[in-house]
Amino acid sequence: MRALVFDEGLKAVDMSIPKRGRGEALIRVSLAGICNTDIEVTRGYLAYSGIMGHEFVGEVMDAESSDLVGRRVVGEINIACGKCFMCQSGNPRHCENVKAMGINGWQGCFADYVVLPECNLHTVPDSVTDEQAVFTEPLAAGIEVLEQVHILPTDSVAVIGDGKLGLLTAQAIHAFGHHVIVLGKHEKKLGIAESMGMDVSHVREFTGRVDVTVDCTGNPSGIETAMAIVRPKGTIVLKSTFYEGTPINLTPIVRNEITCVGSRCGPFPPALRLLETGRVTVEPLIEATYTADEMQDAFEKACTRGSLKVLVDFES
Ligand SMILES: [Zn+2]
Ligand SMILES: [Zn+2]
Image 1 (cartoon, rainbow, N blue to C red):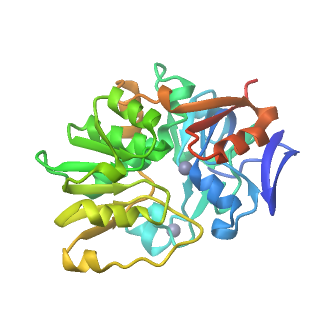
Image 2: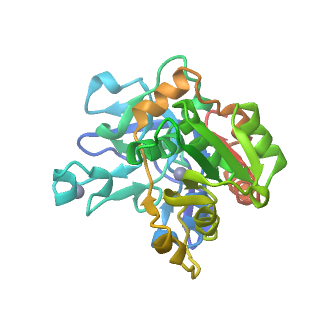
Image 3: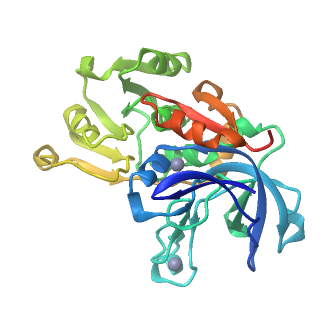
């Protein structure tokens, strides 16, 4: 099978189809998405080597449960041990022995086939296209904000960052009826948010104060913007991960008694529902689709500054 492997450098290679273990499913990947975390992995984040990728939609070819075979599925990326304290206390995403597909200790989905535990899989409704379904994982990460923070109906929410994650997170919060303003730097991307009914502003021109702000910049300086625009006693949600940080003065957090919440992966079922009901639109977020033979070019495109979601089509 074709696969994009990271081992000090990125290589498109030919390798044998993986074998599934007990309770696991073998999935033929139809479409995969490249995420900023993938780019961070190639910079050394979590010292990963192996097949890249954690966003996909595909078809189950073989599984322990025969009713899964032939189903179109998306898959949660964290593989939990089920035995440790965090697993036993209902937090498998924070398993002490956690592995993450294409990020940490588990082979990724930039390949013709991927193996995942059956309990990680979610069936995709028929009316949701592959192009929509491939956004389930990052959309779920946006929805996680609503799992963690009680945003009041009267609250104002600013999402900082008009990239892939920012536009998905903003849409998720907006879909639940909240007043959302997207702060960014790119006319075109802010235009996408505006066309979806959200308020927008260039980040440097915004002088307001908000109750809740979500940093989706993918940049260590995002928290400084967040500290500047959140009201005293407000909430900052941090969604960016990076290989290297920078020194930041957190005094405003103390002085203004700000609540900071770290936020990573989220629940898949509500993400699939938002896609199914059309309350989140993902098509404008697609920058380009490459064939699997062009995986390396696809990755380069995704690394280009300002690039939106780059997809890899394994059916071509
Ligand atoms: Zn991702
Ligand atoms: Zn565990």
